[in-house]
Image (tube, rainbow, N blue to C red):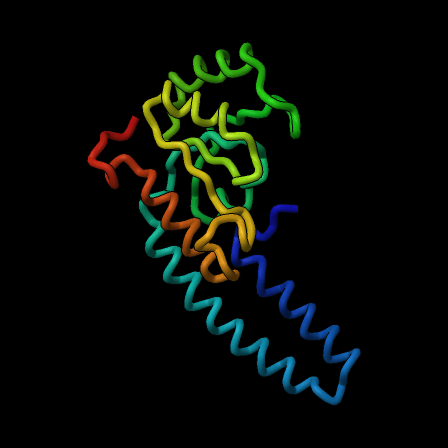
Length: 174
């Protein structure tokens, strides 16, 4: 799960899909291969562009609502310093949030990340206390109004992360 948060994972999926379609429909195998080649080139070019733009995110400490952003963190070099959920799917208690806030004084976060389908109260509470930005990332196509397809999903994700950097708003990093 969650592999879609790193666009580098898309090409192996596309290759497997094209190969399977070619086996099921050999008369159109060349079409599937041609579309795969075009997709792969477009994806590689886009990944290079996103990675260049996202360079300021390397090493940035983030708190996540849920451990669903591992692939995104690895791709962009984000550093997870805390999780709102004490266990997957379990909402944070007041005690957990207080303990997390104490820990974050030692290892500060620059932003608090969640998906649109996750309750925003805890992330907004923590972000206010840390004086950082809460960030709602699309997580999947359709997750935000701008994430209309795979390419705009990653574009919107990078845009939102960059906008949350303190330098984007003239603030100091924690």
